[in-house]
Length: 65
Image 1 (cartoon, one colour):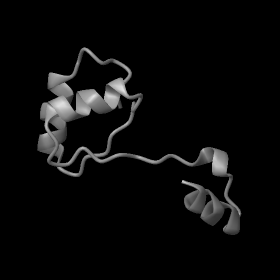
Image 2: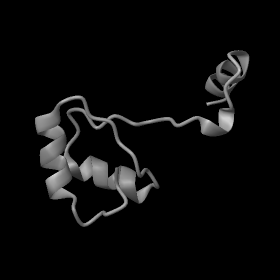
Image 3: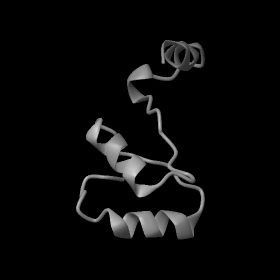
C-alpha cells in the first residue's frame, strides 16, 4: 500500500483519497462474506450478470457496495 501512496504523491494526488478495491470476479458468495466480515465494504466486478446475482444474494449486507 505504501508504494501506491507514494505513486499518488508523485503525481500530485492526495493519498488519503486512495481506495484499494478488491475484485469479486469468479469468487463465490462465501468468500465475499468472509471479505465483508474482515471489513471490506466495496467490491469490484466486471461482469454485470455475475455482479447482479451476488448483489441479490447479499441484500442482508446493506452497506456493501
